[in-house]
Image 1 (tube, helix red, strand yellow):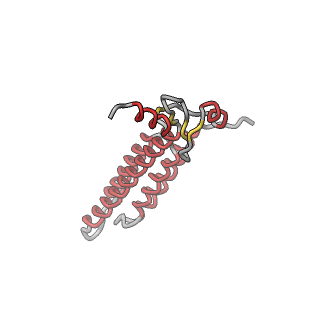
Image 2 (cartoon, one colour):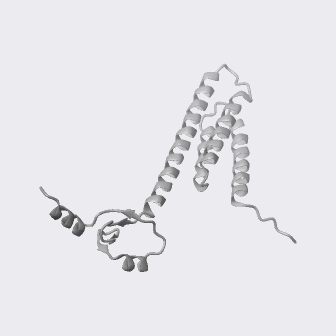
Image 3 (cartoon, one colour):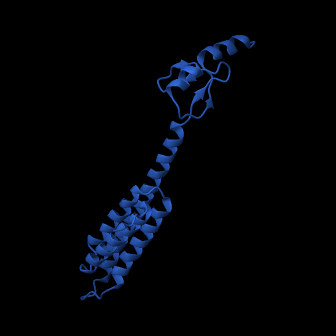
Length: 168
């Protein structure tokens, strides 16, 4: 029997669609959209597991549309449309605040990953500064660490030599 191997992105999309349909079905049971439409926020939170920023935006758009669609999917007796509308607007605001925070989180995560790969090197003597602030020779440092990129920084010894050699 053959098994189907789905990519993580396809699994993510299928999970989202199943959950979105489930939340929408429950949302239709409560015409005022009091708290059910905020379950869409949980769907946006799921995008934390996806490295793609566009996926977070697409999910937020779909959840906003489903929340609005829930508003127009039934007639509310008694004319309390304003209450349902206000609740949906609050839910949509919560969806987009969550999406914005997730996008900020993903950007910060990328920046941390980039900064972790930088290596301060003295341009004069080529000593390397480690995370504790200690300076050591290039050979010694590279034996201990394998995946590094080089940036430049002046060590205290070379700074003293440079400052001692400049006329005041």
